[in-house]
Image 1 (cartoon, rainbow, N blue to C red):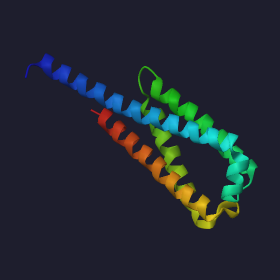
Image 2: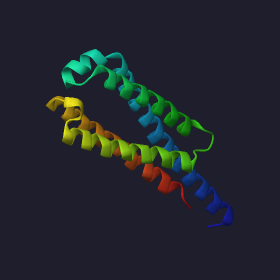
Image 3: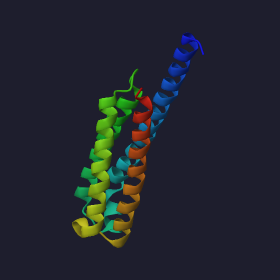
Length: 141
């Protein structure tokens, strides 16, 4: 393989790696934003279903919307920042742990439905983190 062909091949791999990471970040941003919007708008309904305070649910909703916007920004820059993507992974990992702890202790008197929802949410967020880690590792030379 010539040097030019090798360079083109590396460029193609780098492009597909960045596309993978971008997709993982954007998907995370969209799902997180929609989830945050649901918490914010449907807090009274979810509060009754989850046996949790609407204030707590609205606070979670606001956090999720702000976080989703930040993740979207990271995923749509001309060059995806490794530091930015790593920060997203860290926040996602913290969310997973916090969700599992909240489910285990029954945060705010959470119902069984809420606890199951917290575990399912942790699984989805964990999947986003794994996809983002894969994307970050693919970017490294």
